[in-house]
Structures are given as C-alpha cells and as structure tokens.
Length: 355
Image (tube, rainbow, N blue to C red; front, top):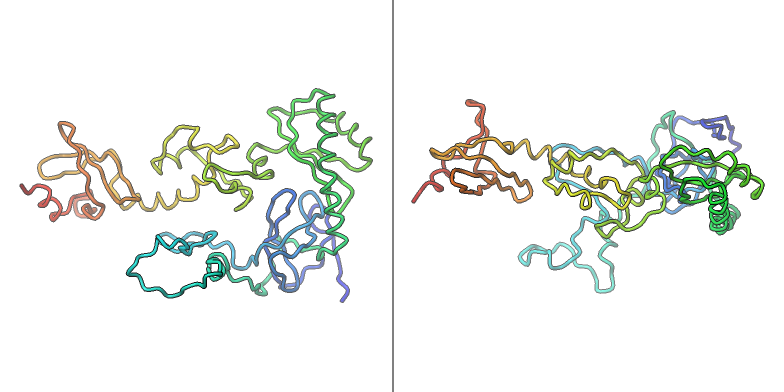
C-alpha cells in the first residue's frame, strides 16, 4: 500500500499519521539517545530501523515495546524491575524456603527470569500527535552503508583534531558521526567557553566536501555518548539505562546520609552521581515514618536527642546526658496525634528502664 507523506518536525519527512499503531523505544547507537517512535506493525527488540532524530535521519535499534513503559513510582510500592530481580546466587536462598523452580545444569538462570525477559509483545494503541514515526525498516544496504561510515569516523576525528590545533581553539573533540539519512558529518565537542569555530568549519568543508555540523555538549553528555565503567563497576547509567540527565542536588546525598566528600559522590564526569536521584523519593517517603533528626524524645525522665535515623537498618540512635547513647528499633516509637509529638512505646520504655 502506498503511504502518503507529509513534512514533520525539523523538516524531516514523516508519514501521514493514522489514529492508532504500535509504539517502541528506539535507541540511536551513535548519540546513545532514546526516543519513542511509532510503526504500523509489530516489531521485535533488535530490529534495525531508520528514524528521525534531532540531527536528521539516522539508524535506530528497537529496544522494547513502549506501551508498557513510563509507569511512575507509587508510594509504598515494593515491586521493582531491574536488569534481573531473580536471586541467581544460591547462597542468598533460605535453606528452608520452598523451591518453586530448579533450573537445569546447562541452563542460564536469566533464561526464565521475569526481570531479564519482560513481555515483548507490542499492543496497538492510540498514537499521540507528538510521537514520531519510524521512517522505514533498515535494509541490508542501509546497514552496510552505516558500517562503512562508522569505519571512517576515526579518520574524521583525526583530521578535525589537527584543524582544531591549527586554529588554536580551546575545545575538546568528543566524537564524530556520519549521518545515515543525508550527507552530513557531526562533530561533538566540549568547551568551557563559547568558541568561534567559523574558520574551522570552512576548513572541514574543504576536506570532507559535505555538510559539517559542530555541536557543543556538556561533560555529562560526553559521558553519556562515550560510555564507560562507573564506580559501582557497571556501565554509566546515562549510557546504558537512560539518556535523560535529570538534575541531581547535594540535598539528595544529605537525605540518604551519604558522605559529602565530593570524590565519593561524584561520577567520572565530575558531576554528582545520577544514581543519587534513584532512591531519593524512597528516602523522603520512609523518613516521614521516623522522628526527625535533631528533635527530642522523652525516655522515662530523660529527654534524649535523636542523633541518627537509619531507615535501612530501621534503627534510631539517641544521645542523652553525659554522652550516653541508646539505639532503639523503629517500631519502638510512634506519633501521638493527641499530643502531636513522637513518643516511645510503653513496652520498650519499661524494658529499657527495667533493672
């Protein structure tokens, strides 16, 4: 069936939008950016497609069906989905726990793991007006051309670095990328100040004989594009988990009782760790169940100060007169609505004060 096409955002050719279709999470291997795109039939993870990006038509890779994504965290929820939430290490199992499934000796544990193998079947849904459409499925010639252009990017980097040194520009070249959908090469760079690269562009055009585009990115974007291993030993979150760089503040580290040493809470990019924001909402929610640090709690006839609240061990540390310290469990305190203050349960107080 012949498809009608109309001009879409950023002058990219977009197919006429039907009312419904299938939406997918598509990742651009070059810029490592993910986007939501629509198609009129079922596609499976790993399928190569040509998609509109903010730089132009480029290669994309189907990651997953997007109709099941975007569920926000609900307060009090204990359900989660990570890379693998099955406990594959036998030492973690309780010896008295009932074994519901036992894998074969030559079977990888992740093969039957719901976290590693989420439902991939796409569903037809109404398409919003802001969702871009996949331009086409990638053909073998598209893939061959992409491989050829990728092989030329190292040489383009070398030439561009020579030109930067020749013009004595204060900029750091990050990567180069040939666009699949049009004759254009994009150079990504970082710089502390605004750089006048007009003469540099003229030199590059005379060498490559195609359109040249220079894009200045931040240090966090540099880590997102290049990737690497973080302090936890895994790939950068911005490179492997999400390309959305959410704001991270020092307040998030304080709420989680982490060391405020910048060397310990900063990533290789020099900015605060992105993972500080992952559990921030959980800490805020849980701390509402505890008396605030610095407040006073009456234990018997002594008014003790709350020195520390540890929501992971569910312990509250109190300090009293003469430097005395007491640790009590979370269930030993409660909020009295009648007096509008936190109090110690009578059971724990009697046990604490008993000789």
